[in-house]
Image (cartoon, rainbow, N blue to C red; front, side):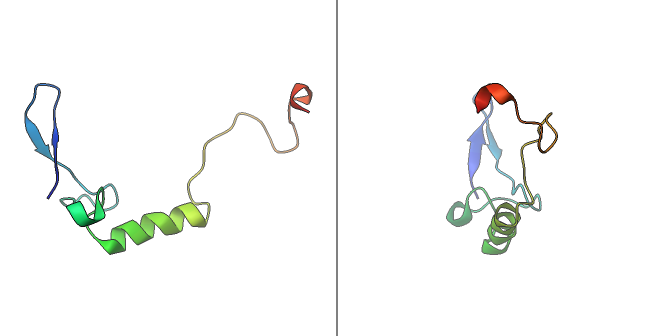
Length: 64
């Protein structure tokens, strides 16, 4: 298990961002290869994205 320091210097356990279990050093920040692979799949299949205020096709002409 990995531990992180809180602002007051105490240790706290790191948790897997995928399932919430205790994170393992070998797969940090995930708890297992499975959770790491699930996250990678989301990135590769464009499941994650950065929201944009622009609609498709409405690019600012000053960038062109």
